[in-house]
Length: 321
Image (spheres, rainbow, N blue to C red):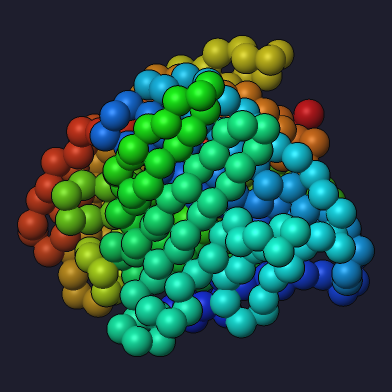
């Protein structure tokens, strides 16, 4: 029988720094956003640490119509890094790079983040305001908090001596407890992405295990409060139309289907994701592609159907080199 993941509600401490006491571990805060002026961004910060020894690496990537225009990252010694285990916070040399508005959360429960990353003349100064309820999934192999399945994003980006005011829709998650052992034992590869209509939002993932079994996940949001955890037996995911990119077989077309009843609520989705542009990189020395995909189809919850026709960001990470 296929096991369903335990999807839980979160508090700010779930998106705080966790660290590692037993072995070198990677941990990262990931933010992305697609803006109304054809720009999109991927920004955040990675740590590689054991206790208080390690490195911290902020990163910043800008895209125009899905094509990479700027890619910046730099590593710093852990002694220059400040954080919190109570709420999300990343400071380098006393300067906040990622900061959660803990006062606003205590006052009205809102999840609001400010990011201000500057690297080699490029800057992303953005505010993310949560528009869907976050969740977390923890297993022995990895831990994942999706603090902002969907967020309203405003601010500015700067590069090539140009400043752009931006607004759009974003996303934020946080991963920890990733070690080289994770890459060796967890699976062959994973796919991950999110899909949105006017009112609904899906965060989905698929891990291909070493025995070629698939570990599927989909969490559906319906607004600021509430989410539905879809049973993996009721999810169909298929990658297709492979090409060779950087000498690796890489899919460029995907279908995702959901047909489930959760808490007596029928939930259906039938979605196609067609790759418009792909960006090759690496994570933990493993091949990694970030896709901008044209997303079409529909999501239906309790008989209320919404059409989808927009661009989203997804990824494909292969642990086999």
